[in-house]
Image (cartoon, rainbow, N blue to C red; front, side):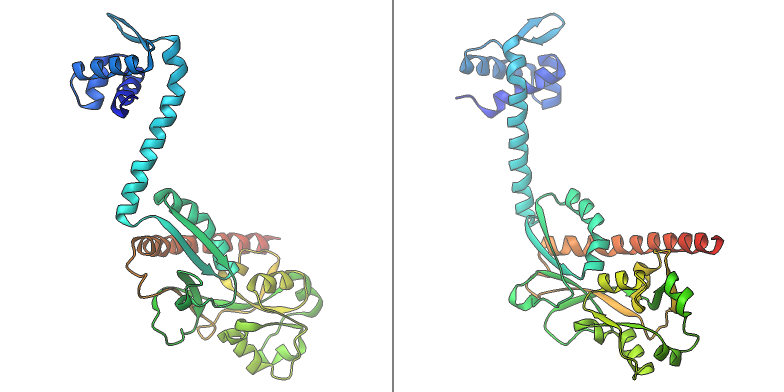
Length: 308
């Protein structure tokens, strides 16, 4: 059986073309490199290099074994990398729950997060229901609302989300748009269901149109968006999501009383674990940059719609 360092010397000579160049890249003397290559040849019973004054050239046997040797080297490097990650705590599964809109918005950033922390496996659970972090249903939650319920969970506020009322351009052409809050009673309303009905903007609509019977309901923001785009009626939507759709019209503009906050929430026993800290430190600036990009995209969409 050969020594891993013998194989490493073989790869260095194959890569650098000589024992002298390999010794420099490995940080050992030339004699050591030559001795290790000879030891590998003896262990395998094969001649791996033709030596000459211009350097070392792979034999047919050496050329055949090179890809497999490189695969072994990658595997060894992978073990070392994972061991270091484990020592730092940057390994294992990280279960993140968010609503579908937020989860889909953050998904492109997860590729960058995985590139930075390849040994952390992200499990994304998309639901508008509030999973129980205390019972271990998820490790981290991204939650929105005016406030959070009192609990022992650790939260960090990282964004404020504007909301407004929207309808499709087709609906606006057919029914017009409300010019005052009391006009909502004369329109087809799409109401939030489940946890969405507790959002400030949903409660504002209910207060200003108490006698209006919603034409439909939905318990997900994504479906509210699609119902509005389909021309079913007027729906409350987060501006960052709705404004990038050129076929939607703001019926009632955003107001401070509609806005919600977004928090990263986790358990006290997890808040200082390296993988949770790494995700929190990554996602806050990522979302800030995402918000700027979406706002720029929304302005471009509005500009095109004005021209049309």
